[in-house]
Each structure stands twice: as structure tokens, then as C-alpha cells.
Length: 116
Image (cartoon, rainbow, N blue to C red; front, top):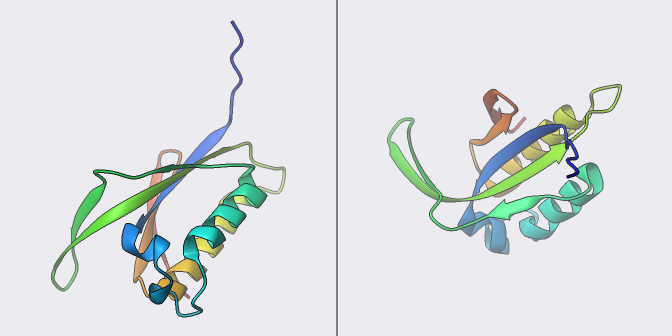
């Protein structure tokens, strides 16, 4: 038997409709392609889950979203730059698609990433 450790894990959720429809992007870019390129370049790959992923949350009013889940596994470099790069990337995506924030889990930690 051979087992290879992949290191840490991170996952984030983005509303499905905003991943595949350019009309939700202020820059009219393909968010799916942007995410694909970033995750491949930064982490060497990713997994995307769709299906029955949804969330309820309350801010000024109750909200509901159907979501796409993206996961990566990675070994952190000496400068520990991968998580900050992911947070910065998600902040930019958040701004581009008009979301207040994006849910992110890194290992045991859960957080909301806001646009600048």
C-alpha cells in the first residue's frame, strides 16, 4: 500500500449561477475559467462539487443560494503564501461578481472573505 499526504485543504463556495454566467461578472469574464486557471496555476489542481449544495444565511434579510464548492489540497511553501493568495483571489472574485463575501474554509478555520 502507498499513501501520499497532500497537506492542508481549503474549500470555498460560490453561487452556481454566478460561476457559469458572464452577465454576473462586472468585467464580463468567465468566472469558471478564471477560477480554473487560478486553482491550477496556484495549487496544481482542484475538485469542484455541484448538486445539492445550498445555504441559508441571515443578514438584513434571510437569503438562500445554490452553491458550487471548490476544493484544493496543498503543501504550504516556506513563506506560507498560498492561503493569502487564495484569500486575495476570492476578494477579487467577490468584487467582480457583486457578492458581499465568499465562504472559505482552510483546515479547521472557517472565514468570510470580503471584497476590498
